[in-house]
Amino acid sequence: MSKESGKNAAKYIVNTHPGLFEKDISEPHIPCLMPEKLELQLEEVSEAALKERIQLRRVKAAVDMYDQLQQAGTSVSLETSNRLLDLLCFYGDREPVQATPSADNGELEAQEEGVEVRKQRRSVWRTSDTACTKWSEKNNAERVFSLMPEKNAHSYCTMIRGMLKHRAYSRAIDMYTDLLNNRLKGDVYTFNALILSAVEVKNKYAERWDFVEDLLKEMAQQNIQPNLLTFNSVLKVLEQCGSLGKSLALQTLSEMSALKIEPSLATYHHLLAVFYKSATSARGPTDIIYEVLDEIEGKNFYAQDPADTNFFSNAMRICLDLKDVQLAYRLHRVVETGENWKMMGDMSLQATYCGRFLKLLCMMEHLDIALKWYKELVPSMFYPNSDGMLDILQALDMAGRLDRIPQIWKDIKQLGHGHRPHIVEEVLALMARETQSPEIQVAFADCAADVHDVQERRRIPLEWSATALGNCTLLFARAGRTRETWNMLQLFKKHNRVPSDSVMFEVLNCIKQSDSPDLALDLVKLASDFSLHSAPKLAEKVQKEFQLSEEQRSALGEIVAMNSNSNE
Image (tube, rainbow, N blue to C red; front, side, top):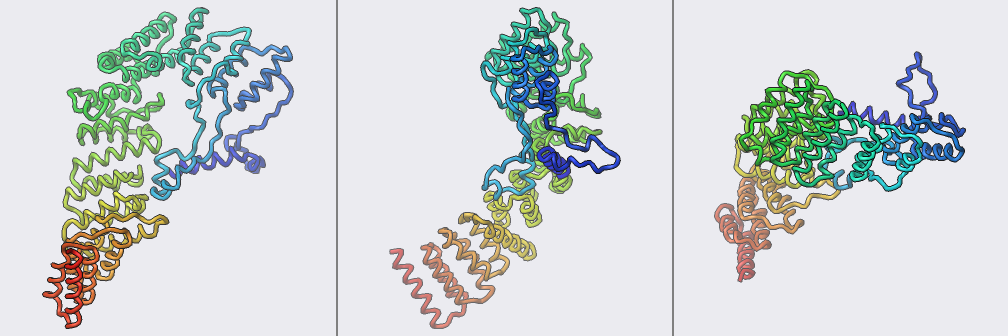
């Protein structure tokens, strides 16, 4: 992860400041390590200058040069015109966005998450998001296309794919109709893009399949051989065809087999998406995922489809929904086969896969096995989010191994989740729920002190709840730490919270161990100030269990009297 971030950082610096790297002092000269030459070299109006601008992906400069050639009456070759169309259609008639460091998602995220956790949740560098641009009417691509004296199949296919890429679906269908009317042949990539558009251009499931079927028939008529992406596109459409998709998905796989086209991980991803829509459907009678695992076990996969990287995280979701840990182990063995781990996708997808795997282990496996996997996966493969750490805490609770919470708290801090209120509440609640052995209570008190220090060191301190303050106070009291216990009680007033009766009695026991009558009187006074129902009982216990002087007995009587008057 750090290595990839370093590569991206170096690439950004080189591409942003190429002038700093112009002096080549390396021996021998290694061209691939030098920055690309991005400055325009040709200034005259010529087709060569147009090619240069296209090569450097200068969209506006290329269009300006094309217009100048048109005004000068200079003809542009069909090949160059098609290359210009490729550029305009790919970028949606806009300049490509240069890679820049990703913007911070806000000050709150910076406070709530650790640096490494933020890295896995979003790409460290933002590249051009061409899919977000929308096709505008009468843009330069359409204008160049209309000005071309000669057009071939490549010209039409480029326009169709560009329109589909930038969500101009109806215009793309019209252009496809023009392609057929001009008796030109499309290419497999254009038909693949058209197949994917079925979900956008048709609303009903049957209409979508009819649209796809017509395209496939047209491909057969034009002798265009479908490829892997064709069938993957069909399966992706079938994801959005309800029960009709289930009946046609296996038929599609049979067609692939007949053409001797080996499925990719994306094929299996789409197949699982057809049959397993949610946790409820995952509990249905289908055994497709088991058949898929039978098929892919022991095989090596390489990237053939952008959707290949979605397979493992989606398959692990199904394992989690089915609560089938043995199936999850089988899936993970596929990941570990050869270099299949490279097919897990970016950091976000990898974290999703590992998070689901770890959650399933925490639910279904023995604690020692779950913790073994936790150590193996964290941090080498991913950084758990706050929900992942809650899963670990719940696993400790179910196994009755709360003594390990202090160690897990250290991991929570390192992973950047120590500031999250629900994590803090859960850690303190689990440690305070039952009285433990003296050794464990000391460890719990140390952990509670660290939790308190972490919250108080924040620029915006945690808004303590009464429960969290009470649990922290209990942990100090049970460990016999009178001073820390009393300091926590003062925070109740500071945060406008009211302690529970059980907390006050636990504090009294702690004060009794240190034999501090004055502090016991202060506790009764504090309970009276909070108007707690336990105040009279606390006073009674203090009177019985502490050796009080006459002055202290008199002060205690005054406190009880004041409490009685206030209650009346």
